[in-house]
Image (tube, rainbow, N blue to C red):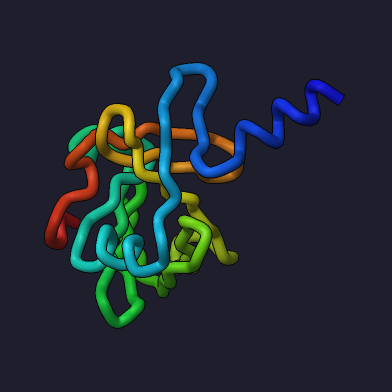
Length: 130
C-alpha cells in the first residue's frame, strides 16, 4: 500500500525524475504549438548540432524531416496532456512524443517509447534548420 501511495504522489501536479531530480511541468496544446511552430526540433540528440536528425514544424500542420541523411515530409498535431503526434514518409505509423518543460535546468524533457531524453535550453531552434 505504501508503494502505491508513493507512486500516486509522484505524479500529482508536477513530475519529478528520480534519477536526476528534474522537476517538470506539463505543456498545454497552445504552449506546444508555440514551442514547435516555425522551429526545428532535434531527434536523437540533446541539441540540434549533435543529433541524428531533426523535424521542422509548419503552422499548417506539415513537417519536414531529416534522419541520418534521409529526407521526408509528414503531418503533425499538438495534443493536450503535453504531447504532439506526427506521421511521416520515412517510416510508417503515427508516433507521439511527450514534451515537458524542464523547470530545473531549462529546456525540455522528451519522452518517446518510454525513453527519456533531456533537451538543453535552446535545443529547439527558431526557423527551418534542415
